[in-house]
Image 1: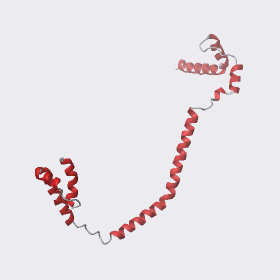
Image 2: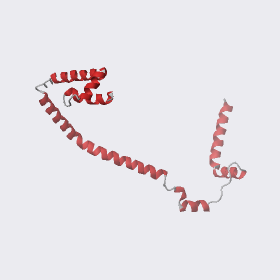
Image 3: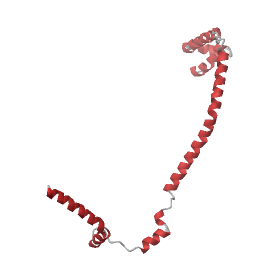
Image 4: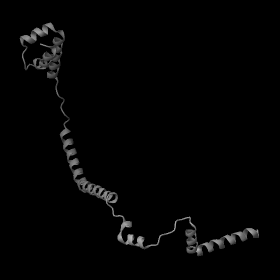
Length: 163
């Protein structure tokens, strides 16, 4: 027999649930490691048999029951908040996800409405910026503003000349 199979049987032999067979005895005589392990296991079992469990404090049960009552009362007080909080968080998260998906995936573009397309189609084509025609149209559309700016420039120039 190998040492591994013998060591698997040693705890049962040490606590008395199995007997020392002739095969085990011959292996123990030949193998000092397994024999030493058996002696150590028997000493450990003997120490465990002598060990006495300590008695709990006389007030242990009273304090334990009081603490259990306190825990139950705290759970009852916090119960309505937890009941409300968990579903509310779930509903809020689902709502945010739905809004996000709606915004990014299938949101209708307001610029693609039929009224907008009709307006764009019927509007005259605007001249390109920076061309002479676009500059003249800008001057015509903003004539009053440009006159006001010229008036401001003229008054600022007069102040400089007077000093």
